[in-house]
Length: 426
Ligand code: SF4
Ligand code: SF4
Image 1: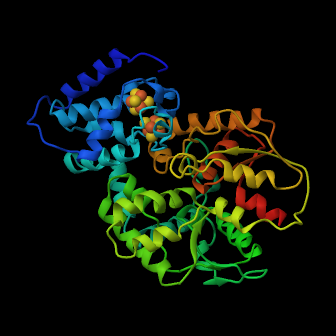
Image 2: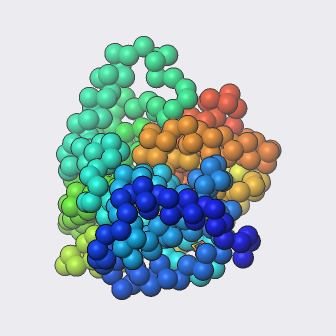
Image 3: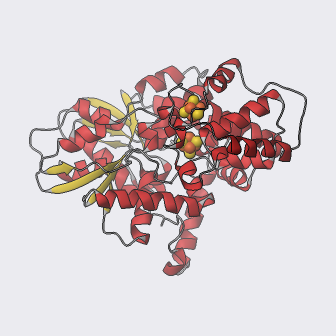
C-alpha cells in the first residue's frame, strides 16, 4: 500500500457523478466475473506509480483506482453514463501496467474495454470512436492509407512536422511487395505464417522484412497470406466489437488455410490481440482454438529455433524498452533481453522505467498528442541516460512514437526493433 486513498479525488469522482446526470434506476452492466474484478479493488493506490496518465496529471479519476470507483458508482446506479465518463476511459493508454502492478489482481483489461463499449453505446461515439469506426472496415484502411500517400507526396515536407505523431507513410506498402512464400535459408524446421501488422505494412516496412529474414535464416519457410487484414486491436480497444470480430474472422481464415505450423508477428500489439482479445471476440469460432494454439510470440520463437554458432560481432550499446503489449499483455520480459545478450559485442544497458508506456497507445498519441509527447520525452531521456546508442523495442507502434520523439528532441539515439538488430548480425 503506497499511499492512502485520496478522498478529495474520490469526491471529485462524486462531482462527476452529479455532472453526469444524478441517480437513475439500477441496471446491471457487468457480468458476474467483471463485478468480481471491481470488488477486488482495495483502493490501495499502488497502481498510481505505474500509470503514465496519473503521473502526468496527478488526477486520481484517471488512475485505475479512480476509474474503478466510477464504475462501481455506475454499476450501483449512482452514476448516469455521460460524456465526461466516456472521456475518462478514452484518456487511458490501455497499457495495463496497472494490471501487472495490482496486488489484488484486478484485471483492468476486462474492465476498461467493457466500460468503453458501454459508454460508446450509451453516450454516443466520441470523435475518436467515430474516426476508429470509419477506418475499421475490412478494406477501408489500406484505401485511406493509399490516399494519405498521395496527400503526403503533394504536401510540402515541413507541413508534416514536429509536435504530434505524424509519421511518414512508406512509398510502398509491405503486403503489396512481399511474396506469398519466403523459403528457409538453412534446413527447414518450420512453416511459419507471418502477420505483418498495420504499422509495419504502412510505415516501418523494415521491421517486417527483418523479422521474415531472421525466421528464414533460422530455418523457417515464411508464409505471408495476402488476405490478412488489421488485427482488429484499434476497433476492439474503442469498443467497436462488430468491426473487430469481422477482422479477427478474416485473419483466422487467411492463416489457417495456409497450413502453417505456427503463426507469429513482430508487432507486439497484434500478438497481444491474438493472445487475448481474440478469445473475447471469436472464442466461439470453430477455428479459434487452432489459430490460438498456433500463435507464438516472436522472441520466444526465435529463442526456440536457436541462434547459429557464428554471429557477426561488433560493439553495440543497446537499451531496451518494454512494449506494454509484450510486458503487460503477453507477459514477455526476459526473452528479448536474452536474445539481445546472445549477440556478440552487444552490451545491454537497462534504462530506468523501461516498463513504462512510451505514450503511443494507438490512437491516444493522435487524440491526446500533448500528453503523449511528454510521456515519450521522458522515455527518450531515460534511454539517453543509460548511455546506449540504440533504443530497442519489440513493437513498431512504440518505435513510431520513439522515433518521432528522438527527432523532436534532436537526440541521436537510434530506435530499432530487436528483429532488425538481430537480422543485421545473422
Ligand atoms: S486497482 Fe489494484 S492497485 Fe489500484 S487501487 Fe485497486 S487494488 Fe490497488
Ligand atoms: S491501463 Fe495504463 S493508462 Fe490506463 S489506468 Fe492502467 S496504467 Fe493507467
